[in-house]
Amino acid sequence: MSFPIDNLANRIPFLWINPHYEGTQSSSGLGLQDMLDAEARLARFAPLLAELFDEAAERHGIIESELLEIPKLSQELLPGARILLKGDHDLPVAGSVKARGGIYNVLCFAENLALENNIMPIGGNTRLLNTEKARALFKKYTVSVGSTGNLGLSIGTIAAAMGFKARVHMSSDAKEWKKQLLRSRGAEVIEYDGDYSSAVKQGREESQLDPFAYFVDDENSRELFLGYSVAAFRLRAQLKLRGIQPDERHPLFIYLPCGVGGAPGGLCFGLNALFGKAVRCFFAEPLEAPCMTLGLITGKHDAISVYDIGLTNHTSADGLAVGRPSAFVGRAIENIVSGCFTVSDESLAAFARQAKTLEGLKIEPSAAAGFPGPAMVCESDYCSNHGIAPENVTHILWTTGGRYLPDVP
Ligand SMILES: *Cc1c(COP(=O)(O)O)cnc(C)c1O
Image (cartoon, helix red, strand yellow):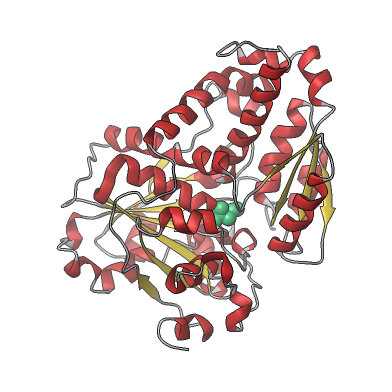
């Protein structure tokens, strides 16, 4: 093996800069119009979500998080830099970045069913999906998903709340409290000894045998991807309120925890569609599960797994415990992701503690994966190679989960 695969195989935290970065969208077949459609659909469904969930009523059914100043943490991570934090760890209803994508995906399915069965006309009042008639239809269908925890929490919560049967296939990494929370919300949890990929496979196969089943395919779903991407519109508005208008000389560097790739991929795609080269995205992965990094470096995407280079896929970052990346996402972002880096479990724990003690933020270990990013990128030759003055950069850490994390005494 050779550099940089050696670093992955030897579990050495490192930053890989993507030599295939072009900053223009590649051939995912998706574009800005698809993002606008997704944003419009979420706006139409906001009244329904506000009706279904007290937590969503706060923003009238728009599920969104704050963009936060983190002065103390910022000073600790890279003295002198401007670092903000996009607080998806606190997203309502699902408690993680999976809220946007997961809920959007189930809404798309429900809307199609409602249209086919004359429950709601095209563009009609989405609260018609919360009526006796709609529920009588939805209860015939099973919505299922394979997950390490958070996607299951998102899909299971929205599916059960709409009256579907919800079946969540959980990998062995899934935390007990996530399974319990999900059961308390009316979903059925099926537990596996195997990893994420095998839970997804089992779920997909089971679903194929049942004509009344719909499987949310984390490895392939366009709807999930587009649901994630709408965050770019919301971030743009939040930046504007702070007077931040990025351009190529004053770019944003954004650090995104990565598992199978859907959430960071959708975010990267959306950000690139709106900001072009004014936004540079870096994906963060655990030392034992750098599947997207490996897929991108080798160009093999889902044809290679972290097991193939001797890694275990065992990590305390349960949300990122994925051994094989999504090929769909890998190809969609291979020319728009700026780089990837790896982080040790010890660092994740330390960063999550810092977030708590310095800024009072409750985040799970996965959500802290981006924290070493600003220092790693700024200490490399990335800025000089790209003609960027480091003092002009605004960094954004994207924290991806934690709202329902039980308090440990
Ligand atoms: C799922 C998840 C991610 C990464 O999303 P993928 O779509 O799996 O790449 C990051 N952080 C947390 C907390 C997650 O649950």
